[in-house]
Image 1 (tube, chains in turn blue, red):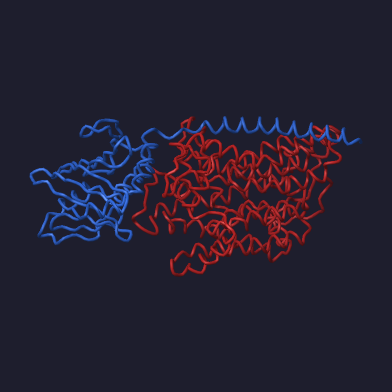
Image 2 (tube, chains in turn green, red):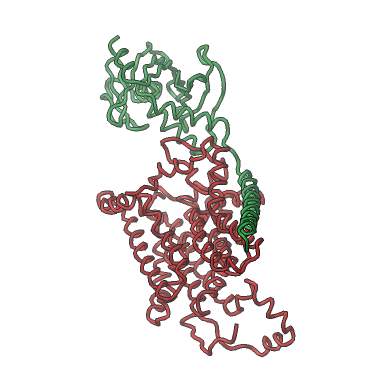
Length: 204
Length: 410
């Protein structure tokens, strides 16, 4: 067999292989499209989770019904989060409260409400992941929150209901609403990504 | 085919060697066409073998299902996990990864950065679950039914494949051992192994018989079910290389397509992930969060994980490590029994390559698709004592494996 003929035979085999492979891949890709695609709510929630992972600190103004507004900050400390207000420190491990003031100082449901409305990134992230994994994220809406374009998610499974509001511009949290049986309230949140900004704010 | 030597042993569970006169008569009458048809995969499975395979498949599945129902009904080991039998029947067989496949079928792929997510799981089972779900069957039950029926089909095709490489007795023993293998409970769970087994066995059988297009389709399907399907590139390429000079041009192209079908399926899956999640490497990223990423020091990391086992009380790793050792021994037995080197190599890659991802976890399950290891076990079973041992210990360990499922992430 001459080299030219061998080359043409090789090219023919490669060409047919390529055509068959393309057909196989196209049929396979078509079959894969039988799967559903994630909803817009889920995709937005994933982007919010990415943003929450970057946030190191939040400062919030919490309004609980029948009480004066409370200023709170939440910072990350060694895989835990610390919510601090005047005269109150709450330590959180994921969504669980692991350290709180003596009961005599503040009712337990108020402590829980403050922990929820402070929108610690770890807490919000853990709750939102649970909602995403369980199926379409509930309570998703595109709306305006305090004159900002925002997305809304429900991040708690049941009562008290906690609604998280995030900016449509940068997906960082801008507020939360809590509706419980005996207590309800809302908060305005400022989220900060870096230590440098945190340090500046903490001196104010 | 020939008449098998006269032997009948209820113990070994092999086909009685009595050829009935009626069958001989049919053979004479049908003549040449019968012999032609005999070469097809279906007809290579003889009626007594069909009966044996059906009995062993049914018995082993009854063991798995009854054990699962008993565990669920008793609420063992913790009262915290006790889904009601009437509302969630066979929930135990749909736990672990079964939940993730169900999520994909229900919601599609979604990569959640920094958290365990579903792009780590391959799409074949969720696609089939959706097809069954469209007929009104729940995703959970659909997954379990698909796995069990797939395993039955896989048992027959694996028998036909085994007969190409081993004597008929060994081939039958291979399938019997596979049905009662301690880890074979995953063939009854909402896992893809049950449907990947027939696809892989059919791909191998078609490669041996030179049906390259069907082989390519089977490899593609198998790889969309489990990444182990890619390993078929080794035996298919070896078989193709052997036959290359005798093949016409068209068959060479078909053979090459079959050899490349596994990697092609992976690329197709990556393309789909890119369109669905915006990230073609979502699979790798999700696997990393699940604790798996291929690296040079992966084997060392797997060893470190094994050493740290007592500290983390993760004794499941020990089970997986024991099975890896057993698979390696069986692969050596298969090599010694003159199973072609490329099957043994493919089996070794199936069992050992996952160790380079940094974990021993689940390797017992991965090894189920290492055909050469199961053939090695069948060779060991030529000894009467070993045969007895496997047939008694297998079902007992199968029960133990099912009963202990809720001990880990119920």
